[in-house]
Length: 397
Ligand code: LMR
Image (tube, rainbow, N blue to C red; front, side, top):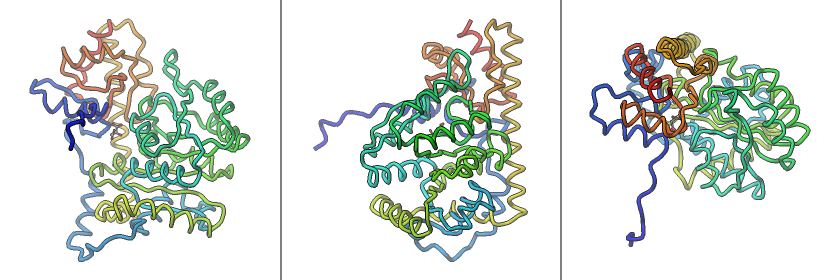
């Protein structure tokens, strides 16, 4: 039956983890996947999560969640995204469903887009998280690219972005990263977001925000919601995919939320029912445990404060590793400019290393990263930063 099936290519991100695990070299370093590590290089379970687990332990409720997931969870998730006092929430105009993390949110939206706007296009930034391409491809939505990053400045290609938004057919869908853009670590400024939002209005485009890193850009979850708030206050009907993988360290729990701002409460009931209908034949209903953890934290002011503190600690450790990496590269006498290492934000540094240089890093130094030169700063520690800087210097001189 299956003799015609050939092995699938390695995933450009998760394949790096597989290769890292297979390497037995003692100095190996994994700066591939975007998963937070402490300064000892160990995965972290947040204290707020531990406390939430303690509170829900022994729960007798192991029943199915509804198709749209935990309503308590989605209510708190959308308050985090849009702000407690958002009119769209008071007006009950937001359709929200619990999803299998951020990937599940994007995929559910892509399927919804295909079903209800079958002719529409999606514009995807260059570059973007590699899985975004797979998601819209598998949902059979035709995609186009828009300019986002300028390799010359290692910053935002704002004029290219605006030109592509302008030239896209009116009513196109655009995938935007709400904050801490993956893989570049480059976000528009507040002023630039405002201009982008205005142009979207003129063109009647639909913005879908992927918000996988709320809290990781600035260390402040409210501030990191600024793009969402700007578009919302300008009256856009946006959609937003949230993930709690990074900011609560709940990677394997697969807990996320897809929300869609609608024009009326009736419309939001209809949209939610259709999102559920798409989920039902795929996975019936989402898992319980992660949603319980998140809603326990977000509904308790004390735990929420602790969470804010812990997110900031993670974000701050990453910032200090950016400084240490740049410092070490400069100390080694690198002739290249490494300012972007500290200018970029969030979990990633888009180093500018070429595929050949990345291959050398892996082959000669056992440093694992994606071939686009993205370094997950979350995997850098005081123990490996000198080794990493030296390896980067050796392949880039
Ligand atoms: C990443 O970009 O490394 C993460 O979002 C993990 C993943 O699933 O790719």
